[in-house]
Length: 343
Ligand code: CP
Image (cartoon, rainbow, N blue to C red; front, side):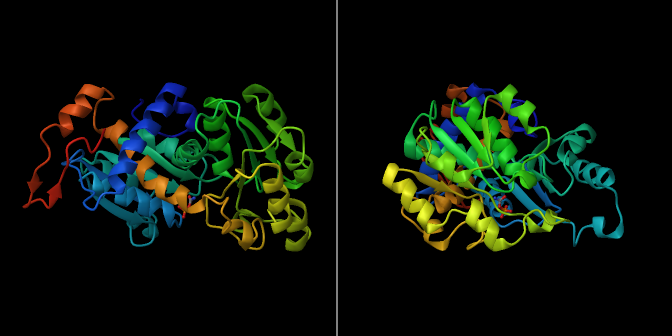
């Protein structure tokens, strides 16, 4: 795996599958009473979030802590960014403290790529503007694979505010890399410009008609609803919230029709959800919803990403070496490891 994780396109299929396999081991660990392993002891991970976050920031922090890394959270407010320090100066200042990884969320598309040119440590993109959110795509793929197995040939429909969605961009890359068939649906005003060329290159379908896709010949295995990102909208992208819901929301009626065709259909949403706008509460809380599974997978997948970037080896024997004989309790460090915890 490369030094940084900036885009989902940084990962080959083999690398994605390696990360998902590691995440499965990490998920087992998550179910244990004592979750801590020494894998990243002595490593320092800085979570620098210039935009708000609940899931990504807390799961990166938990992931680092469970792997015994020293994790520190910074936000724009409370750092010298609020005094006008540039992104470059801020990034290089943190890097000068000999940290190992910088996890960055930023409102500017391309910010993480730019920071990676300036620093020595690894950079992980935790969401940059309207560009990408690669660990979200990995955790979505993990959630899907846990439920439906191999994604080859599975039909995943991604619906909503595509123009402003970094989750959609990363998911299209990761899902098609894993062999899924992807259809993206949005009103014309929220369909990104240039998507026709991209869809031809990467082999996914586009549509403005949600009902035609959901009821088409190609049965749907999973539907991923995206948040309407009002905070990134400067103009009127749709007449009213009601009209958006009628055309593009996962209403109870739409879910009922989906379930009639495929009782095993899955409903995903990266969160935070606008209940009643892009997803009805009945759909968000339905047996088909895996929204909280996605959150749970987020910790395991971020542990796996930190492991692959920072632990220094993808080799299974090395991983075994790290855990062999590690079924001891290190009382002073408060660290308990159990044999095979990472396998
Ligand atoms: N899905 C996601 O990125 O959520 P947060 O904004 O809460 O991190």
